[in-house]
Amino acid sequence: MTMRHDPDSDPACEPCSGTESLERPTAFDCPVLLTESLVLRAPHAEDIDAIAILADNPAIATMVSRIPHPYGRGDAETFVRASATRGNGNCVYAITDADTGQLYGCCALETGRDGKSLELGYWIGEPFWRRGIATEAVHALVDMAFRTREIEHIDARCRVINPASRRVLQKSGFQFQGTGMIDILSINASVAVEWFRLDRKTWISLIAWSNENRARAS
Image (cartoon, rainbow, N blue to C red):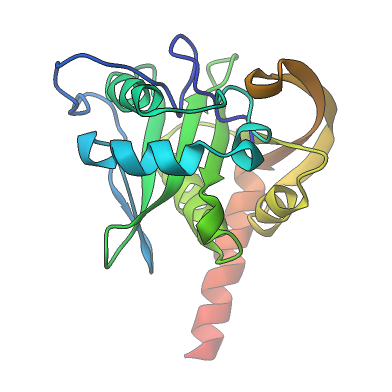
């Protein structure tokens, strides 16, 4: 995914230091999101060590655009602090277990360049892969975005060599749009990516289909 850790442009993972408040300004509409097994909330100081451990992994850094490698505690501190001051409708979330509070990874929504769309990004720590966590988190983000924002579509990108991320997007209703290139900070190179989009009409259809299936099951 294109989740970035650049302090100047990253909607999701930005590193920092200092002592000012880590609380998210209330003016931003980034509500806590609850799912069957997850809580998506703003990253805070208590997450720093877990983020530093999970993100310090080339298997993650080489799949997103702006996570450095190696990734240290200072990077995690900067990310947490920067995520608390995001404006322009950008939302950064820590993905955590609803029962234990275990941090699984991070996800984000960033306002698109046209100001009328959003771009989705996420990463999950390797110990928690293949548990459906990313799909559950993406569904929560997408539902929140379309219910609370006047947007017509959400975009996402993943590397062409990342079939797991592609499956997450496809299971969430995203449709393939084309290919392109992005820069990967950790390897200082440009790589091929696939571009996916979920539009509002498709999302509404998926919600209606899901509700209809629930009604039949009951």
